[in-house]
Image (cartoon, rainbow, N blue to C red; front, side, top):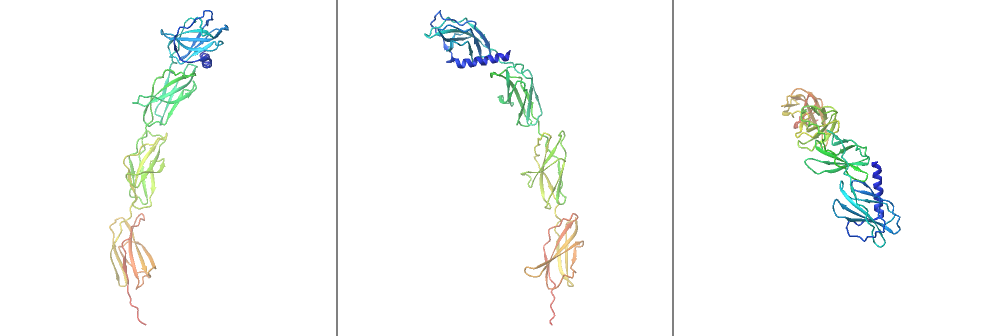
Length: 420
């Protein structure tokens, strides 16, 4: 029945637009009356929220040119609101009225001279109130950067759609954030929201002719918070060619992954190094004694990533051994002897590098490795007199890391050639 009423009102609207001369309400002026003109009879009405439809018996008087409609609001004065320019009309719709308001109407006919018939009896009609609000609304909380509303479909079959409004406390301004087509579609998901923030929603039902219901109750919800920061991170400082990180998994974070960010500077900028599923990470470092700063974030099952800790943790690859110092270098009994010292207690062995200077652009290099003593005697057959030899020493630790070479010392065993 209600759907039929809506259809009738739409039909009346079409007639009102196509068959009427709309000039807006005009103050009542006493018309010239011809009592011989026919008066509209059996006037029936149908009320909407902002409109009232009229229907009357067809007038067969050929002297009639059309109809004149008068209206007053409550006990107010009558105004001429429309002139219908067809004697065949039997319907009229008065539009843009106030909801839940009483109006009085009179309708008369008029002829070509401008005379009017006796007006009809006063017809008192009241517009309908706004549709009732939807009867139930609820929300789903703790969603990642979104809010979900569910509500009971409106019982009135004349409802065509819904409008959703949102406000963000303490802001008191409501903003339309969505429209839902179809009376039975009773769900709305609002996306692109901020983390851990409160939002309030209300829903309006909209009829087929665009009338908005009273608002629903307000549904308040809070979006999901970001995971807690990762703050307890340990970083190695003495592993050769690498740095290891380890941290504790945060509580109540399911399906977690971790982003490892790194920088050469304590204050950043930090760039993403890796995403891992375990609470540890190992990075290869080519440079000995290299310091790297790290921050770790956690990503939960909803892809929300925690904020970085304010302070970065420093990891350092194992440094090179300390460079030895050559303390003495001389030729003893035609044998080069090089003595050196080292302040590094973790040295496993030493390496002597000998460079033979043959010419301006020609050199010959030999390495003596695995040395445990700190005195080196060059008794090799490759050592020959009358050439300059340069010696340097490096320290090597248990992990094979080699120090920077010491400063070079030069030795030469001069032997005069016998004359033939």
